[in-house]
Image (cartoon, rainbow, N blue to C red; front, side):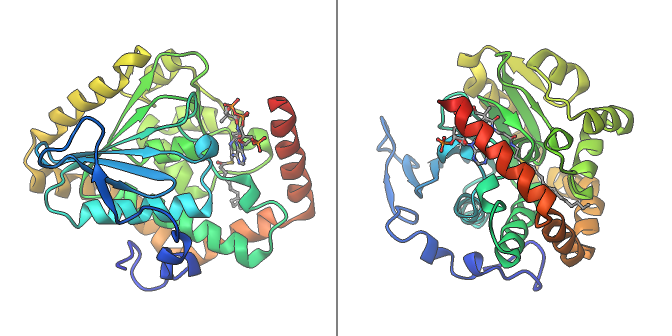
Amino acid sequence: MALASGVRFAPRALLRPWALLRGTTLGRTEPAAGGGGDGARRFGSQRVLVEPDAASGVAVMKLRNPSNALSLELLTELVISLEKLENDKTFRGIILTSDCPRVFCAGLDLTEICGRNPAHCAEYWKAMQELWLRMYLSSLVLVAAINGACPAGGCIIALSCDCRVLADNPKYRIGLNETLLGIIAPFWLKDTYVNTIGHRASEQALQLGSLFPPAEALQVGLVDQVVPEDQVQSTALSEMARWLAVPDHARQLTKNMMRKATADRLLRQRDADTQNFVSFVCRDSIQKSLQAYLEKLRQRKG
Ligand SMILES: CCCCC/C=C\C/C=C\C=C\CC(=O)SCCNC(=O)CCNC(=O)[C@H](O)C(C)(C)COP(=O)(O)OP(=O)(O)OC[C@H]1O[C@@H](n2cnc3c(N)ncnc32)[C@H](O)[C@@H]1OP(=O)(O)O
């Protein structure tokens, strides 16, 4: 499997991705609902459903994990689906959206870093880096159709797309709220934020752990459009058409020119970033606060 980073990254899950997917449908195709014609074959895995439309060259990728928390399995399946579409010259764009009601993506799956050993935390963080690198540098047009809450790691997934359409629901807040959980966004999340909303707005939002409701997210430039919930998909398709109207080679080279320095910064320090992450999250104090936070989330549900 070609990796965004070259040779250094080899987490067990990605060296043996199919092992994680035993019993799932990844790689199998089936007719899309209401489809059946050319390009209407969907494929997917347990946690990622892909509905490709060969005629338009656009695939809709739907996340369907509980709360779409970014578990190691979800990260792995996302990378595999992305790679599959990148390698198929039929496709020029992906609309990324959620199949879970009210949640686009709940961010890092905290159960992957709470009560786990350092080796697992390292494997998990490398998978997170890998997904970000692949999405951020993807040659395809990525449009996020954000149809639910989008905190922290969820916001990063959205920020690594080229364009964001958010449903107009005050509960669907978006932002990097790490500080409120007592954790610190690593430099590459910070860089992605700065690249999108500018330095001053990022400085404020990161320190305060702001989660922006739709109107404010639009105002600060975190999303490109806010539309009624039932128009998120159609607006994402219109945005996609606008981006696909540009010749691929010119758009791709321009994207690379804009993003490469940010990605290279992580590539240069990937191991150190992993070590920082692991030593930070494995601290007793951080483990205790992660545990308390997870407990609060579970109780809130009941
Ligand atoms: C100095 C060096 C520094 C180095 C770097 C160090 C650290 C950087 C690292 C970290 C970066 C972190 C980024 C993150 O992404 S942290 C995760 C942040 N996410 C959140 O805070 C979201 C929490 N979830 C929610 O607010 C709600 O669940 C949500 C609004 C998303 C949905 O609400 P809803 O009411 O629909 O669903 P719930 O009933 O609350 O949840 C259902 C179910 O899901 C569980 N769950 C939710 N989110 C998570 C999660 N992020 N991880 C794990 N599990 C999650 C929740 O507990 C429920 O579970 P269950 O009861 O059904 O078992």
